[in-house]
Image (cartoon, rainbow, N blue to C red; front, top):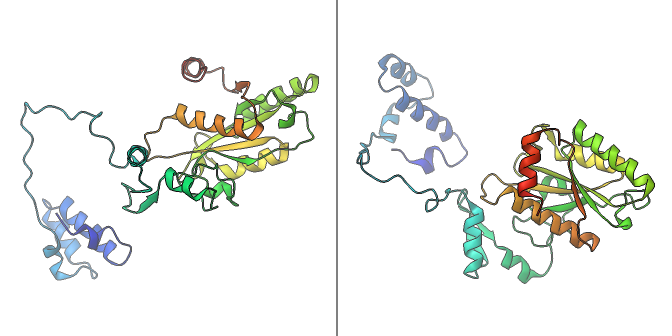
Length: 275
């Protein structure tokens, strides 16, 4: 046990001593290593007083296993936020950082998007300038070229799941060929990590996909996926489709995928997304 506030939670010189404390704990049974650590020039002689061993008793062998349904992830802000909204509260404490965060209710009381990229913005971040680096909810990142055969004004809007790779581009080409006979609207939908802003599997930034969409003149909606949230993938996609439908004023007619040669993905999407 040690003082986490002093040695781990705050940036500063003591973070180095926090690492030393961890090393002393890890190598306690190896005296030569401990002596080498203590002889380092930056390790104070009284550092041993900064931590102590604590005996922990193992749970009884007949103790029931913890129920994952009643013991949610400590960093699950989605559940904490939902409960705060149910109580009519305008803020909640973020489980991971301890900061106060505005709930969706607070933003609705404001009546408009403030442009800051708030975590629970109910206005699809419409006033956020730098959307690739700031949006936290699904948001239209590019409205597309209004003159092409895939412009949203044509209606019968289709949503193509785009990861920025080869298969997605081939699917876009197939849509473009179809649109030459009868134009329809197309929106590219890209999910990415909300923290790193990187797209899974392709390992590219959402900025790159935005540049691709702008070069092609095709509308793009970005969908940040939060690590510290239990909100499921399907729920995030439903939110994104709602943003598209509000933007175009009609229902999305079809979902399009470029990787349907992967049978297990075909089956999962058929089960989860078809409805």
